[in-house]
Length: 319
Image (cartoon, one colour):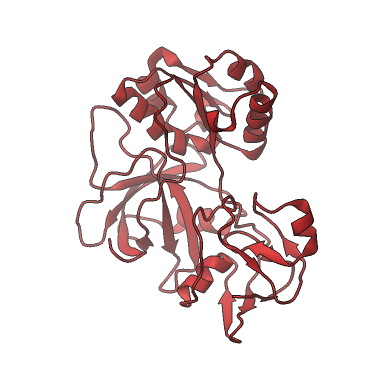
């Protein structure tokens, strides 16, 4: 795969819960896809020839240690009725459906510290944590896991998690996890990885800070906050006077890249700040990043184009 996006197709689908469906993706030419690393994700462009939607999903990989590699990629999508992308996928993705896929990217990678590993998954966050569990078991690491959800029937891959982790996993099917107690019980050389709803990750970070954990000991995956049900199309202008249309299901960054405008980016999740762009005309911005300060946000003179949008339909970029 030399270009950013490569033709692919859906090989099959299966329902995991009432709201979560697994999809197997293969290259359109039938070639085998490379094995993704634990914590990897893929960008999908889909929705007709224009690629109306672009979404990122964790690559799950094989579901047991018995299977070393697979020629396809596996994702699981939770259907959100008011979210255009996930709803479109659930309604239209069938065997043979064509789409475009990016290379595997691994911003949420595991680090080799030599110490124990604690894995924490909440809800659909299991898609990022499950391959880490498998990796730990293959490497013989000292690993413990918490998987929290709203009832076992709503928790994708619960059986696979128990088979991989044995007695090293706690499945919490009701109530709020006691994250301060969980972190306090860990050895000083433990590294924790967490993926789940925002409040859960905020609680974990607060607990880690209160316990005096070094920041690098708690590594987290942030779901992309770029898309919201109320989003509408907009137009951005560049310093050359060029006008670029941005669809409701597309980020400003993706639209600019598709139009051939030179941009800079890395995480594409509002964390790194590399895509933060100045505005030639101040505007009201719906900031969805985790990089800018409150003062910078209030000024309305810059935004993270990978996820934020104007409150309006026109934006004048200094790019």
